[in-house]
Image (cartoon, rainbow, N blue to C red; front, side):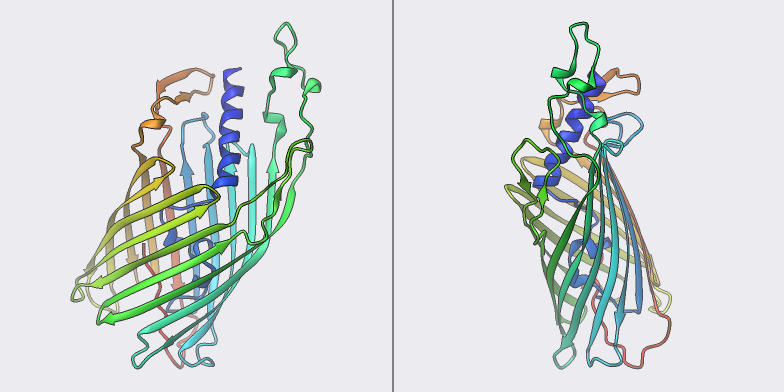
Length: 359
């Protein structure tokens, strides 16, 4: 019964997370199409392939991670030889969010379009506008739930006594997001940037239970920004911040990343990044060390979330046989792996540089 109870607990926590806080990544700039539609095509190249995988709270439910979120996207920076000092961005992103061994499973397929342009005497200003739309498919596996009213007097379980009325199968909804992005080079090698994204504009219904009030997915507002300071071609310093608000849940990410050019030749440049970030949300505090590497068009990153909040210390870890080990054991941790590549199929006639935020 304890395993079933924790299955229900984790799933309910996941559903609350879906209603109160959408998917979030610690390395949010490594997943540009889920961060802000205006980031589509916003890079110096022709195409970009990006991948991110997040595993949150491993060990809570045995072999299956409590929350597992992979995402892959591809976008293109088009018409640079047709649009003076600008480009048209087009992209496609797929996101899968699994909670407690697919007790709750969500798939998103989203198409993004954006227009990015630079202006000013030295193209020091850049602004972009993006739109994104597609399908969200939610599935809740009710076979993994148990209810107190379904137990017989001898403690055997009879699923036919389930008092809840629910509609099974995949619920398909339409999604629409929009965003803005701006950048300004205020001095050689120094720039500031700021973005805003508005998600869940369709405000679609969450309607798994047929005899309960219908809940709508709340709007989500995201503001992200930062600075970049190049240090005489030897390295870079990148402080940044992200603020996310959805319903009554607010989240703030802030931190600093530093990069050292281990190969300084601009044509062969390789950079090693180290960062320390922080997340504050609903009374919780998380410290996030990061490491990354960039060489030519390749980027790779790793982040590890360490929850330091007191509120998690009362939770237990559930083993494969249903036994409980230590208080708070392995529950609050999480990690992310990211990979991306920016490439060119041909040398553009006009190199309309578009700034792409890092880490």
